Image (cartoon, each protein chain N blue to C red):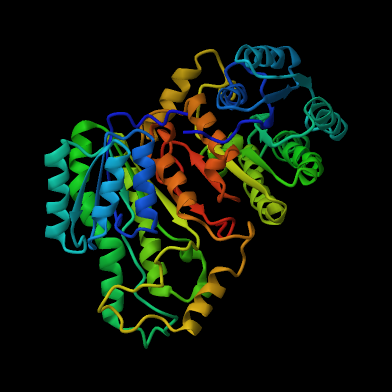
Length: 255
Length: 267
């Protein structure tokens, strides 16, 4: 199926990790027809590896270092991408992470601040910064990466992360509602557990497999699962879908 | 993108209407590589849909059945299993609205409640009962149910219909939760308003004459109350998302209700 991505320019944040969702999303966008996929990460050397792989697929790419919790960095990021490729059709907000695992009753405001900044504030900043460019081209699509943790309450240590990701859900809907008139769709993909750097320790698969015991489909998510869902929202396949939060979690979130 | 439909057998209910979601879903499944797409409906036009599938090079069979009768639903599924040996993909599209307008709780007839549940919920349930055991045996199945944005659109005033559709949301989640271990996925696509026969042509004998222009206008106004993307949906919009949910590429998505309504519904 042709996803209608030909000629499109995409920007993927958090595309540095070589085992993360961002890289797989960036590669899939390139494989499915985007002309150019710009990638950004605070880990610029890793982002460069991703950009190299995109170029090997015959597509344009640049790796840009940015701390997306920093407004000036984000503004510079958008300018660089549009200077290079003249537009941004697709923004995939993948960057995020659990900044700390301090239980809520022990957490200091600065602990909360880190998670909120990294996961919610960052997406608000990139969206705010990309909108003028999308308005200029009279359209665009934004896909935010949320998290199943916004609906899971048993893992107390991660609750501020879950709260921040819950904010991403609501921000997605608010933005979708208000930007629809500008032909901008905004959706959110909420992954279940996957063997990315989100999982601490060396044997990520073992941790995910343990978590998968309570998941109806009996397995954890793969990077491909998340990339697939993200690219559908980034493409014309979902041309009439906006403001949706899709849980890609093997049935672990059903509400 | 290859959606992984090679060698897959699909069954689509409610595929008779030539301007409905079912037909468009059927043709998209065939175009994307399904080996066979069986279609069923209570109306003869289902034969037209099957003929179009064959033109696309996939196998097809049209089975006329009233899926609100359990024996007919079961016999229909048996025919498909006998013919193709399996059902990998089941799209439950059949459904209709039986009320013309808002009716206060004390005025809406009990028969309408009963018939609406039979048509939108029981039919789907009968078919899933007949199909799921064969999916379990093969450890593979993708079920997509068509729900409705009306579950969140109170102004439409179609409360009985909306309740029957909300039941589908929950039926989807229940099925997803309990059949996940058999690698059977179940998701729901909830369409917003689209130019199908919905509401325009009521099944004969259900509830008297078609809606008046005033009733239609009121329903339309309710549907269009908040409509961020500024246009109605099309059968293609619905077919694309339905087929994605039916495909291998959403292999980790289950129990989800996806509103395809241009932002009309954001729950």
